[in-house]
Amino acid sequence: MIIWIAIGGFLGAVARYSVNRWMFQKVTSIYPYGTFLVNILGSFGLGIIIGMEIKGQMAALIGVGFFGAFTTFSTFKMENIKFFVQKQKKAMILYLLTSYGLGILFAFLGIFIGSSIHHHVF
Figure (spheres, helix red, strand yellow):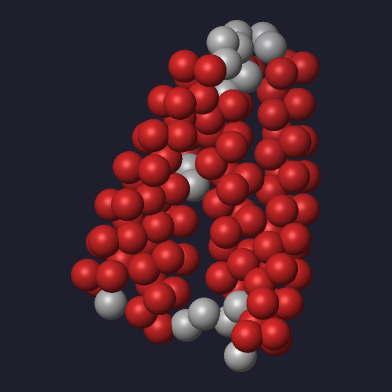
């Protein structure tokens, strides 16, 4: 299991870095769109894994490994602290609300889609 998690974690970390780098090149803003995007996509992806009822090695590879490394709670928290310290409270509140709100919404959407796939395929 640890090997599967390590492989998924490696791929997830590389994917997160790539998405963040791509967003940084595309969008100039104080708003951390790269972190926001990986966390929303990660919530959606984990929702699909849960909805499809994926277990065992695949859950370790994709769920724990890939999405565990792809998403980033610590960077999200540090970016919010940075907004607070820089007295950018509107940006902080917007970031918190959109990240949590859309994260939960996309997780539920992923569960719904994953469940639909599971019931139609399996």
